[in-house]
Image (tube, rainbow over all chains, first blue to last red; front, side, top):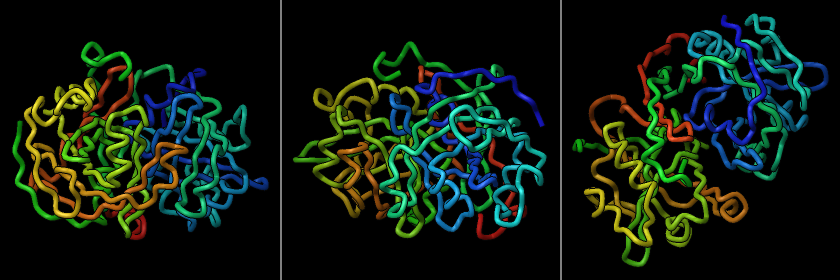
Length: 185
Length: 185
């Protein structure tokens, strides 16, 4: 797997990597154990504070770890990690140490106990901002407290899920900055 | 612009087109007027009922039309419509009839008063499922009541937004169905 050199990144700009809709890996820690899950149901919900919503099914082993710890890290894997992304989704953290099984490196985060996944392009440390929709809609609303992003390439090649085993790989990036009104950038 | 031949599509499978995270056009109707907005902050929230959440800023002209009518249509444009997608985001429905300005064709929907946009690849008729987070988070939680999807191509080439005027165009589609556990498909 690739190793990325990362730098601190402004939390109010994480939409650059999340708004296009990639599959992410959610890492968590609770009572001395860590876990990772594959997740595709998420959205940006605000710039400042930097808000991010995601759906975590209550049957996932990660659900209780994340609900109780009120923290997680959102990690953005690149397309070369597709096999790992699928493998993580195929097994449960109640039986498997996913960092060990998939040869991933846990890195200590700055503001949360959940570990960063070193092999991912970007890592966003999240603290629970609003728990009110967790029971009703399995919706966690996070504040991104710290962001670590690879210094290159400028844009990662990400994996997006269509269901039924079909993945879309992100394609070319084009700038139309001159055509947008400033307030819409 | 392209014209697509569309067919009725199962509402519990709309994730195929929305989960990858494309920019969508939201059409609405209220008191005899229609409007369209460009929107990128959304997520799938359930299969059955078919739930879809989206963030609509309360400063958008569409906000009150959608909040009051409790209906909208989510339209999926393809990359050939990028100029239109940007143009719709650059002007406000309080001054412009966007269907007329952008040469788009409103088509009568089956279950809602908001019009479908004929030129889009897919149209999802939505009824408000949960309004409780509208004031707090600008979050509308919709039930997809009816779905119309183009019969070909199988997957649309969609536009995804990174902010700062940069768009990502959806790339290749690959199947790994044989590698996923059935419950994860």
